Length: 376
Ligand code: COS
Image (cartoon, rainbow, N blue to C red; front, side, top):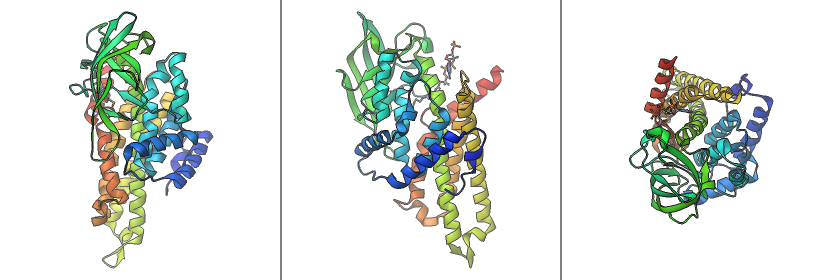
């Protein structure tokens, strides 16, 4: 990568620089992968990242958000699916790391070794952005629960070994009546109803729960705490989505710099044309500004902040929106090659779009930021 000066910013410590070096070497040797079979590719990536020790970062009693961000941006720069495989191990077990019992935390040993895949099941066909109105019901039956309902857009859906599922238990109205559950994939009543295909292929599914029985020990945290648990997990992982976008943007900038140096146009190097320089300057500025917001959010959490809702929303909103702009400029600077199937810039163009939607759409992040400003 051309510019690594951000590694010396005061947000990061020596151990982060070591992680960046180690993971960069791993990525250079192992990535990119063939994505022809995305399921098999993701399973393999999780196994390999686990064997190499990098999944240790994704869960446990303490999550270092700066390490998560650094890992995501490094992986995203090399291979979007590798970033996805890494990130889902963290998102899918985030509720267990933050609120799980010692028994539930035993799952982390497997997910951190890459022996089990995890998924976060929050979105539903009728509630994506409006989490508080979700319809999946978890009814108390004896000493346990019975789940009925449907989830959609579930990453790792169909290949996960465990799902963190949010359902209505009814302790109060709306957001006050949800709870979180740990659901092993082999639980009878869990159905993969549809596999979903998207612009940039990832393992995604619509899930159904049909008279699915869970013991009380499957409850994560307290009954009625589900909304807060989901938001606390998203606070951490939204910052890391910003980091993934940053990785895509850095790659687009690097590709554009080398294209500008190597290509001639109108009797000069592309890099000598001031209009091209203007684009490169905008791209570099967007990348650095996004990085500052991402590592500010991560550092704030690592310093012990109870919540980083506003910082994470700013990091995700800005980094994903700006990465889209950086990548669009990269496509423009690459001319026809930029839209040619299989070109790295073309795949970045497809890869970035979903990041402005999932884990809280850009519009939701604006609401979160504005509410936080208004509450001051
Ligand atoms: N951490 C802890 N608690 C939080 C929180 C957070 N980040 N955000 C909200 N809460 C608490 C609030 O403090 C409030 O508690 P009180 O009732 O005690 O005051 C409660 O949760 C409800 O919060 P709020 O009133 O803000 O809820 P809304 O229904 O208005 O929803 C948004 C807020 C829209 C921000 C939320 O639904 C959201 O993030 N939606 C996007 C969902 C998403 O990211 N989906 C993607 C799924 S994964 S691909």
